[in-house]
Length: 188
Image (cartoon, rainbow, N blue to C red; front, side):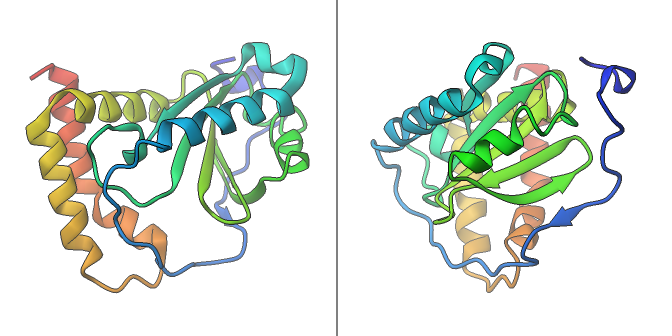
């Protein structure tokens, strides 16, 4: 369901961050060979939670922990793609029953995470522009040592600062993320 007229209901029009701003209290860690295993455990947990509806759901490992050799915050990012973002009874509610907690509800995106904040599950519709960007960025970092080093250096510099909100840290990385993603689009 790529078009909004195929949705069960209108999508939200505002950003709701459950619990408000949160300070960043994690450091960058060297790449951990266990991260793919943790992802696989959550992929299976998500599949079980979504049951029969899981057949039309995509589940991928994204973010820095999906890039071998890249230092990262020890938070596993999972991309879940669904037919209809507004059908929360099909995907968000089962994930909450499975033990995840709702953190963000915004147009085109829902974020649930583990109570320990060690796994973030990003839910989008299959053809959302963000889905392609996540994949391009991840795949570029996996295949290009120079861009992987640039991104890690940028993150290390940003982590030297105090962040009162994790979202501010994420926003500060935007320019380098866009630069790397642009190179991935042209296949350089």
